[in-house]
Length: 343
Image (cartoon, rainbow, N blue to C red):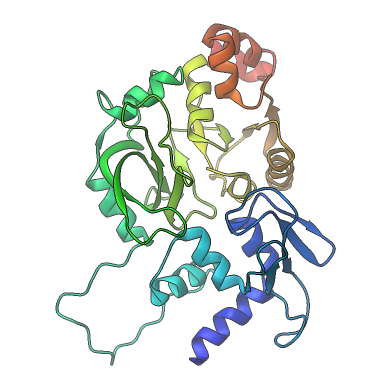
């Protein structure tokens, strides 16, 4: 094994819980294990990842076993399955990025004249976003309006791609499908990744495929910044969830962290005074909100939690309408922000 690869695998094992929280956020820690349903991040108790143990050999940290399927491997295998990255150099680059390591510089390595652009990187994400078009009037607009959201066409962080490649687990051939594309950016506004939601051909829902959403690039700590923030910010999980809040309260500055695992790790901007965390009504979302709330409180940011009536705020919007959702939010927004946001 190439020594740099061995070093990355060892470093991943030393940070096994961080890897699991980022790539298998539907699971949870129990003792010395991270437990989740399977490699597709479904809830359950079949797949066990060892979080502590020796660096190698029996009982090594970072090893996983799926009791239902017999699958086993290490944390690089988990990252490969969750990102869809197939080329090993790109997989190592993703692992280095998660660990916060710089990419290696190899000055004496010959560079092909026309290197193939790798997938799964921020550069690849930027190319996909640039090849997409604004949402207004597209199938993505149809999809969002079917979910009660009319503001999607005004969001510069959202775009539409009519033929975004899709491949389900176990398939050998990719198929072009229409997709809603969301830019994932860092605190400096630089694109670090994209999130893809594949859509039905009539736009009335998501595509009828096993994997309806997938991200590429570097997500940890970053977010889909849907509207500009000032001294207050609302952060939640899903894009549709956060757009539902804007539908009811157009003045809300909102970010989508895309999952409960990433919600707990999102990097908060400097100068933030008050943080609202829009949770989903599930245990994973509540735990993520607790982690983010603790981090914000440590640096002196006041925190409030916004809770939906149903599963999430898009469920509320579709069930009760935007005026009822506005009134529900008015009871949870702090007095110091109520007039400013609600008018």
